[in-house]
Image (tube, rainbow, N blue to C red):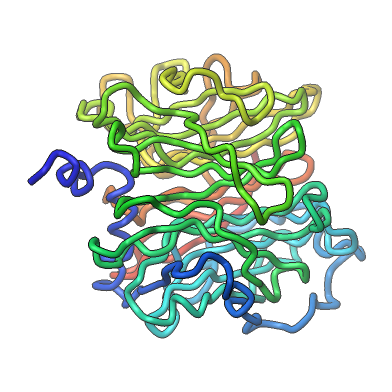
Length: 431
């Protein structure tokens, strides 16, 4: 087996994610889609929602939803399976502000789709309102992975603030002889009811993977797409970024995190902007060192585009007693009373003690930091308690954190096993 093939089949992060499609096929028949076009047929890949045809009229306060998140115990987000959850609260959509939207990658008659759920009662309950079902996923087994959901905070090209974007990795299950994975982007202008193909942010130059898209807006107003890239022969995996002025044409490909050891695998970037204009990125770095494999790291940028020397791997967030997270981190920002900088909230799949043993609160702990990610982080109870202790694509894998508008409550969507099904659960608790 070649070094490159060994890397791609090792238990490092991106191969774990790629295994989602394989494992899901065995567990509940998940298949998905590929990108076989350069956009010429993109219009044909729009799809209508299977939910309501228009935003409902039951939104409270005339603001699209409850003003605050409602404290609830864990409940299933949807019937059946769902992977890689993401949740946002609309803040730039006028009368629809306050609605909470959540997305997961789910099976649908054997085809992988993006499922869009909505809450108009502050996250207490959700209903399906839309889905993204690219016709190119209709041929089963192509592979769909690790989607993201984003609301534009400002106009980009001809897309006004409030436009919703959804993107995912397509095509990991194609035969290696013909596989060219892609990051395909879709948009919605009706609060997630219907979606249309917008563009392809990246297409692999070889049979290796492109994973985990993440959107942000840089200081110059560009739409930035961060993702994990396996196609560089000098890196088993690295983090890269491209940008766009209109959401259609993408350029400026450059490395953001690229470790010197070829076998290291930075991945799963999540980016948040702080009130002072600083950008914070969290990610994992999977290495051959078993004690620190897939440890969560953090780094910052002054403009959201230039992250400094890619070989500078950032720092490892820790609590005062040395606990740290491994695998699949996500990050959120919330306002905090008396603190103009607000606070960051961080979660990872598994929490470890300083000596490398699994921490007692693993699977039921979120961290906060009121200093822009610097210094020690504090532990708070996670809204969702994840019971399974398996370390694979399901339990607490890339959980989504959504603070309330005042920062006093936190909605979490986290996945856990229910029998043989990987099910997403949502709950809200105090921060």
